[in-house]
Length: 142
Image (cartoon, rainbow, N blue to C red):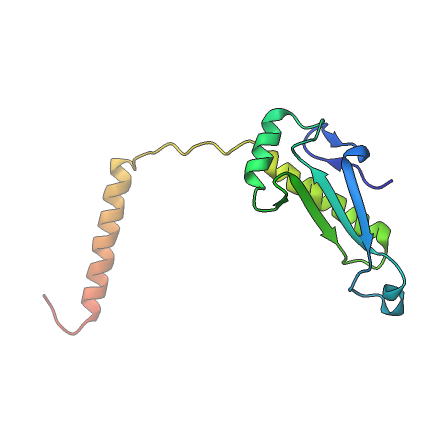
């Protein structure tokens, strides 16, 4: 049908879990726009997906909560191309990128470190040297 929606690694969303809807687009195309349904709306129910592991589902539902319709359905629209086929491909790629970012593992927590004594001393001597240079530029001498 269209490009497979690859989430991460070997996980691919099957076509049966995707819902496509087509409508008239308001983009480029001249008179062609008035007669063809080139805008694509791709819907994917994250909560009901059988292909996503439970951990990924929870992560995606949490991270995409602002984009989800009815609390579980992710909607992607594409109308930038003149043909329905290219808009379908663009929507599939965008959905794959959104899901990939949403299910990615969280970044490592930052471990607090302290600068070494030598680094602190170098910074302070450089500050002192810079202050002396600036003080030397003024007309007064202290």
